[in-house]
Each structure stands twice: as C-alpha cells, then as structure tokens.
Image 1: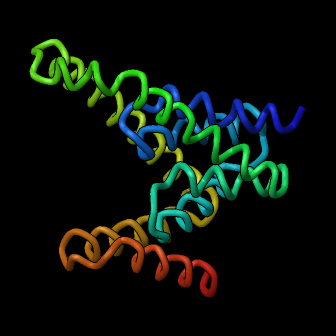
Image 2: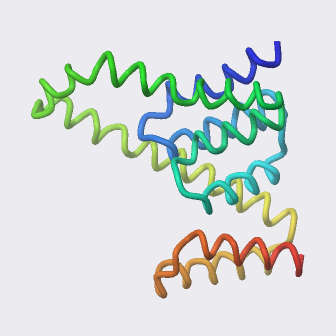
Length: 175
C-alpha cells in the first residue's frame, strides 16, 4: 500500500505540474506534507533547499529522497519513475501534435494563460516557507536571511547553490 501511495504522491504532481519542476514543487509539497503527512513543512523546505543546491531537475531529486525516506530503495525507484512517467508519456504522445501546431495562436494563448497559475503556486509556496520560518526562527532571523540571500543572488550574482549552502551552515551553527 505504501508503494502505491508513493506512486500517486509523485505521479499526480507530474501530471498537473505544467511548467516543470518549479511548478510541481507546491503540488509535491501538498501530497507529502498535507495529504500523507510524511514530512513537516520545515523538513520539506530543508529537502527542497538541499535538492536545489545539487545539479539536475528538482522534481526527481525530491522524489528520490522522499521515496527513499518513506519506502527505502524500492520506494525511491517508484517515486522517480512516477515523477518522470507523465512527462515521458506526454512527450511521446503529444510531441508530434505540438510541433505541428506550434505557431497556432491558440497554443500561444494557452501558454500565456498557464504562466500566472504557475506564478501563484510558487508565491503560495514561498509564503508557506516564510510563515514556517517566522514561526521557527523568528521575524528578525527570517528577514536577515531573506535580505542577505537577495543581495547575494540578485546584486552580487552569487550562484544560488552557494547561497543555500551558506544559509544551511548559518542555520546549522547559529540557529
């Protein structure tokens, strides 16, 4: 039964997560944290931060780690396959059709309509992480980490993986 739950927890976000890994992260969080309660928001955010510091797409990394935590090696394999399967199936079935209609105004409009939905999902995810951070370490520490991260990434052009690693070290030693 647990393997079926692992499969569903990653297959459903894979189907609904139009836009790739960033769009499916809130959906994976919903399944893992709220639906099956395998992790807390704090644990999920730590796994997400660690996964973002590694190369490769984020969704399979999350699936591999969470699947392993919940169901061992077999759970990890099932979670990764469930994450990749929807994209693979759709690429095979719909690839030719999309190429044929790529210049269609309807297809271009569809893409424009989906983008705000992805932005809202990412905004909700960010809000939940900020709220959890505020409750866990307080407003001052949260604002400090957010401001320093912004300055490092946007102004000084430091790679996000380095900023995440520094934040992990900061949190590990000082918090």
